[in-house]
Length: 330
Image (tube, rainbow, N blue to C red; front, side, top):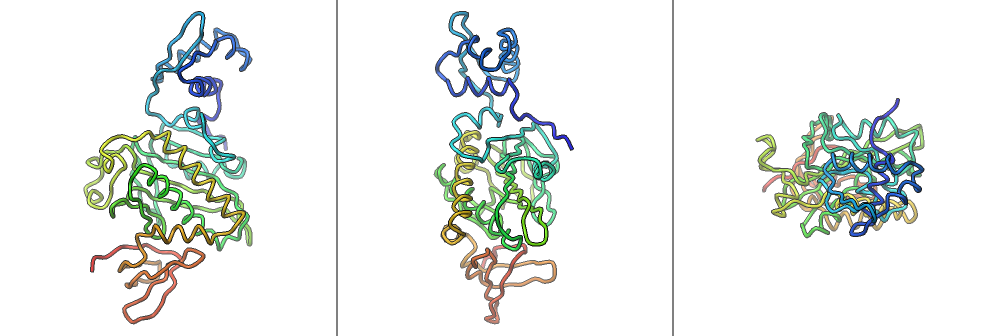
């Protein structure tokens, strides 16, 4: 299946050149030589970038310099200055798509680990258990393809790892992010991010893991469906201003790679400790809904595989591997 999306065209590479040299002029001759095209072709690509909203000055003697950018999650914007070894080295960008997770799953077998699929909006975003995830413009909707050396039964660890990465990134912007088991990130008790992890596996080995991350970044909470307004928030709402989404994605990919490499090289112990320290669920009275039953109790811990330990009202300890968790007010 051929996936259409911006990955690394000459225009994207020219944009990356200009962003990396922001504040300086880059000669048309140098750009033409580097990309093996004519100077007239460079001019056409620059005109196309201007049509997309980039403010680019030109000088006959000096070349081109970028002085302003639109608020888009273009691959060239994200890659410019990205300090990772593999996360985000390949980025497939879409103005709109049904679901970045679907696209990432379709291409997982043929792309390198760390490949990112990112979109400005989704028409069919999904949460856990098939729930619809509202994904308007202004948010951050991305999926990352990973290929960890692990057995399928340990796959839930990747969801918790991603939660730690998102929460740490949000905290870099000065907000008190916490993690709700198993896959939500909260700010002041309200959901700002959901994580959906899907795997492709054989009997005892994982072929790929797709980590889908949906963050309400520069989204107005007034646009949320009424039933979600009391329980959801956005980074914009909490900060009182828009964030730089490109900067956020860059920081997130750096955090995700650092934790993932630590996980692959050192195991899960230190990561689950970070998760526990940022947990919004441990110590809460909760309602757990699984495919077969509903349970109430106090969330007293999370084990080394990410399963929730629930102490029921009768004093029994239950281990919940998968399910929906609702925090209850006592």
